[in-house]
Image 1 (cartoon, rainbow, N blue to C red):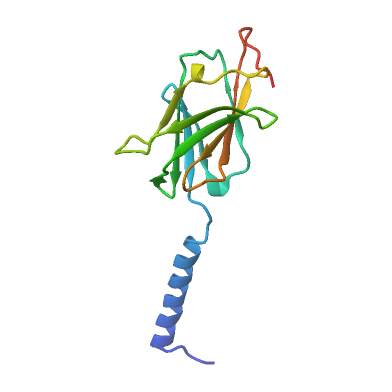
Image 2: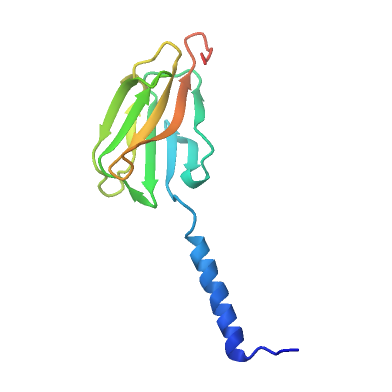
Length: 152
């Protein structure tokens, strides 16, 4: 039976640690976004684990509802940020452009009344920036009509 020398054992430990550190950076992404309605978080998604866009249904939607969106690229706020609202046919309904973040002001905020309703009461929300020029679907916003029925 062959014995390991002290230096071989240390080399094996160093290789294992180096491998563990290397694999910890192998996950693609690191981006995360959150959506808030009137200050309450309704969605948080880590992009590397994304399994598709969520539908966020807002009951009794009011024109004065405030929606805040944050998107971080590996912990950093993007530049030249844009939220795009598209209908089911992928037609652009509204585009909101946001100033580059300064200090802690990294939210992209808008009010429900800023977005025209489509006939089905839902829109897909996309985020694009200098760091993500091709854009990414974040969620589908869906709201109930005056009778309290969500059209989907």
